[in-house]
Length: 111
Length: 115
Image (cartoon, rainbow over all chains, first blue to last red; front, side, top):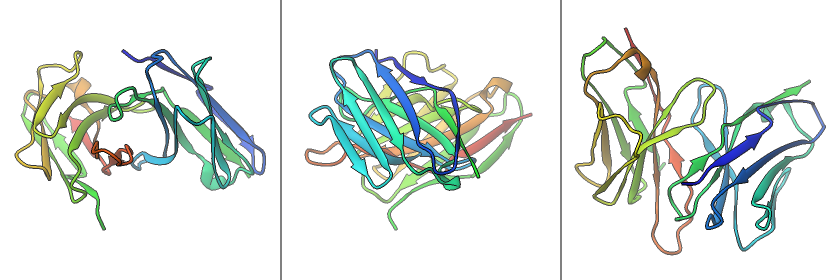
């Protein structure tokens, strides 16, 4: 089955700086890559996703890049704010619905 | 608002006492999932229903069962909870119909405590 590795496990950034989280996947058939944000005690929520026919996608301060050849994808958050502090999970799917999650990255934005 | 609802939000049970967690959705999604999430870990898929078809993950213990009586409702039954089953249980839904986005929508979760 699919194996998704996520790094780093924790990330502390100064407010206003950028944060980058990287994930690799093992199944070359994977074609859907969502990112979820989970605030403390709350449900995971989708923040951005990308499909394998696209190399990059941006939504305001958040962007995701995908390198299919290398089988890795990354989340970029620019101009970080305190409300960006949360756990971020990457995921991959090869059948369009069942997700394999990475282990998560705890992001702390220092004011 | 269309949403995924889980009840109860907090459940306390005794070691070995059966417990049922419920999930309902107003999104009319055809796929429903149950995840177990322990502290500081990723959600772990226990099983999912694709329409009426039940799909168990290979490493899900027999102690966990599920029922989906209709499109809107799905239940998680833990037959004999152990201390290791204390966790947050998340229900999620998605639509796998052609042309639909594959986003999974999560419920708020049920926090299970086993005494």
